[in-house]
Length: 240
Image 1 (cartoon, rainbow, N blue to C red):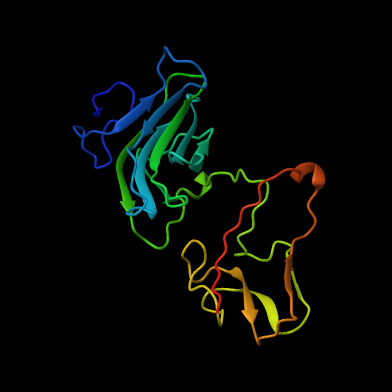
Image 2 (cartoon, helix red, strand yellow):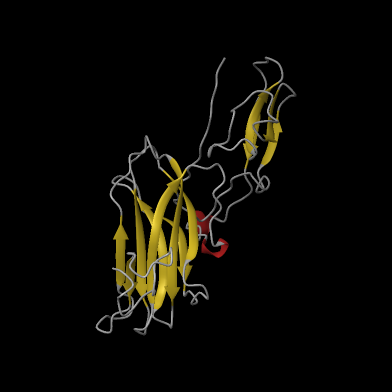
């Protein structure tokens, strides 16, 4: 719709009163917790394996917008919530920049989905304009408080520390180390997400010795909370 609508911004992101955008407003005939969906077609993972999704949004709340989220879905993997505003406040500025990094999962084609959930009242709106995929190495979530909550029971990226994991070995020939790609003498050239300045755990061979074992051991997990769970991890291996 354009800015002539009753509910929504009075002009598009470029201050054009005749410009068009996509708008979701809390209709008077709607009910609490109803959702409005805006979704894209599927993007090929070969061309869009990792992109910075940038968009402009307008939000007027008045207790009529319960939440707004950006999800990424594929035909063979679970939906991932990438960006979310829970019980959002109305923004002072009419149009605001939004941004989040989106990655293909396991090389699968994906689409992008906006999900807007209606609140208790009927006076607010959420509008989006000027969507784009950018190729840039750094793509911080914007606004910063829109980072989606982690649905995993436990996760460790090793970026900020070892998360209570410990190293041990039966000798000095084979040892684990906590390093970046630049610090590793022999290992991957980047971490799992493609960064060269983020840390991971690497197994370093100091000298060939068939009787040396190295161990990477976690801290104890509470059985009642973590029983029958799926443990996933990423690894890089080079045998010589």
